[in-house]
Image (cartoon, rainbow, N blue to C red):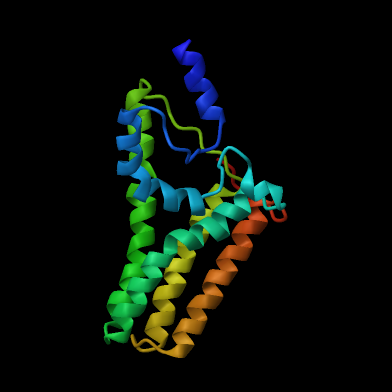
Length: 186
């Protein structure tokens, strides 16, 4: 009977109603400062939020979610750039992406493989190889553009980096939506 109640609770949205037992009331007061802001701001993830407004998973991942996770990097880069440390700002933005690719993706995959008898993680993405090559090309273009601006931050450099990002975004979305096809598939 207890297992059936837990399954029913998982299907229900978060409720902020006052609990009946004193033990649950103490816990309610303890976690309320955390739960209430989350209840206000987070959508119910059991529903497919992005697809309800016609946005595919690929577009969500490449645009909205990527931008959301990059906001802290943007804020720190702007702060250090305003302090005259433009090289630190650029290094932070490039370094965080390299860290994501070399540690953020492989480490969870390694843990998955270890806990599942070294079973490989299946990654399904249209044009994954081309996207990786595109990332390396973008890194080369970023370094070349910085060198062309004589290793100084300027509005021209910022505009050029914005154009590079926009180009990467468009090509990646076109690869994911199979508008253009990658000649190499893995």
